Image 1 (cartoon, rainbow, N blue to C red):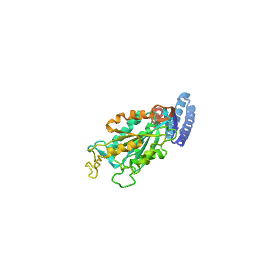
Image 2: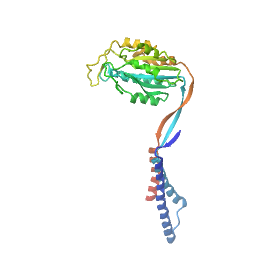
Image 3: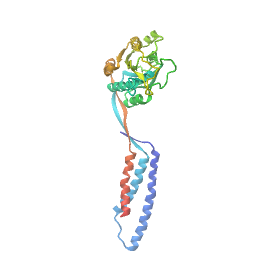
Length: 321
């Protein structure tokens, strides 16, 4: 557990405690002279000090609250050192298709599958990338699941970024070869898996031989394609099916050909529940190290501010007695 202060200079507010203390001491001297002249008994030392302590506590607690202390906890998890996974989302417009208005889109279902896969691989660093006509990394592999879930939920979306061309079919899965040629995986990752969530509606490969060669490089990248597609699905962004989109019935054969060239496999959406086991089998068992991750962060300012009410109530009570 670690305590940090977001605005530490605000703690100088504690110097304000000198003002009420000075006022209190001046008042006590005057009252003491009055008692002496009237021959009254002096109150107990405990009674005088308790009020001074209460006023000091008010200023000290407010200064501490102004410094905004935050408690951060850390957690230690085992992390595979020889294996990494990239989840690649097809973010082309066809991924907005759904069975009916209001039903989960292909992209929303892909998000759900990705989160479920990450939960099945707690020790394996998992990254996130997207593809339309090019492969783009959004998060390099990590075992910090909070960062991963935030990236999946907030950093990627359909056509964000948009494709660089205005072709009728925006997706070009040929761009997946970049994962093998652009150092997406570090040298230490001997076991590499690419999980591609797509509807398979892609342009034909322009250079199939080069594509296949990229996935033959050692260490090889194992590929798993999850096809999210339905013949009756349409895009209902306005509540009415867009006339410009129709599911491509040839996408199944096209995706099977690409998977074959990459030496991978295609998993149907209905079988996505077995995806975790499929990827686990490809990764096997390997060495791990302990990795620290930041846990929950809790701001203490609200609680400290409420604590001020205790000495403040004491001061008000003494004043009214």
